[in-house]
View 1 (cartoon, rainbow over the protein chains, first blue to last red):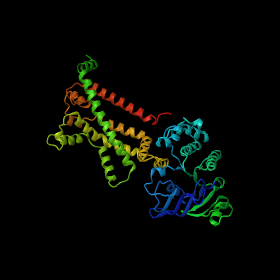
View 2: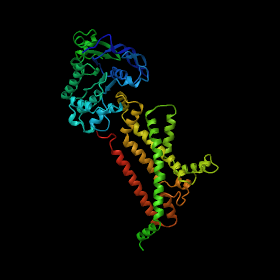
View 3: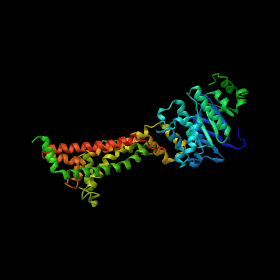
Length: 244
Length: 230
């Protein structure tokens, strides 16, 4: 469900991130459309996670502009702006306590009492039976789904997913993907999905982008990306050939 | 008369004074522990979460403070609070407040240093995760202290342990004055010098019992969940 092209939720120009002398991200231009699922694929160290951290306002860019909903991100980014975006980390960290308490955390810090929405979210992610279970007793797939529930309970404007299905078995991958499809169908939340799984991008994304050495090689509608890549490196990546 | 009977007799004869000593020990050490925790936990969190100019110097000072000999602290507080000292005008020397000041100086570095270590031991991504979930600065620090609570409680326990049994500072700045500044540790020294070993042992047992009880309460706190169950 791709949103209006002329009304992007994010707009980045000349976005660069430099650590020491090493430039890990150099994005000439990027627009993320409202309500879309944008998949970002690429090899390790391509700058995918760094990009997500910038989009989540967790750290400032070294140079360039990032605009969110028409507002330029200036550090320190106001809490109200930050709170519209949330991320599920590749290796999510849950807090001590039960599943319910973890999913309640983002609401609690916003002083929102919404026990019903927590229960609904736990139901959607097939976690109701684990509601009172300590997070230390969860399996990998359950852990990841709790992290996803905790992010989604807020109904964020943007959900950033960093390898949400890494190291999961096919059954759990399917559950995670089903949730992403539901989010896409509902259209309220824009999703930026970083994944190593090329086929996952094909299954879930409206658009797919290939990031190599910190720069976007190609960004296109997913069908086009997978069938008519303009850049030979994108075509090679799709075909599973080594290109880096 | 057996040694045990002798001890019981001595304890009976000083029962009133004994409870007075126990109560004062609680008051002085409890107040000092509370003040150390109130100052040391935020200081430890700040040091564990921030990078700023002079941080390394402060951390080195705190680590040095963790090994401060109580008698040296007592001497410094004595000189500061003595009539000719810079804070002599407060007339705190040989009062429980002087003992509290000395004990806070001994305990604070332990609480701050160990809290800092506990915070630093957390996953560095936790802070980003909390921020990503929309936590403000204070909520971030509160959640991180909550996640490090085993270490934070251990820091307070260490702070308490460092002062409940110290003698040097308490003796120097309190003076071991009966009914005014006599606490368990100084009373033990006194009774040993007077040759009342049974009584000294009894007081020692009381000191151990008190330390055990307080640590038991701390450890109960350590295991408790942070949030009310819904």
